[in-house]
Image 1 (cartoon, rainbow, N blue to C red):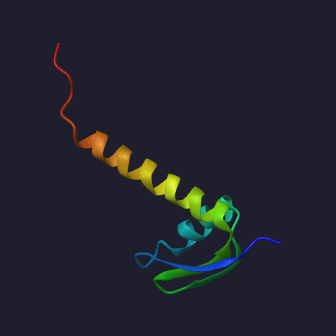
Image 2 (tube, one colour):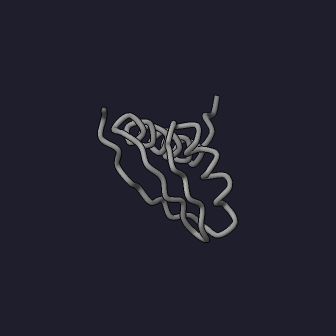
Length: 71
């Protein structure tokens, strides 16, 4: 049996349901939604998927800041 890690993800108030949906998509278990945070459990695969998701979002936001190409 793989090791389960307990994680807590803070979020802005009102975005808990969105984070809950994303955490479920990553394959997390025992999800508990409270005001301003979502606690859940998952293995190393859930941690890795979360890192990839966050890095992709950061890359997207950085690319949006680039000025459009001229020409």
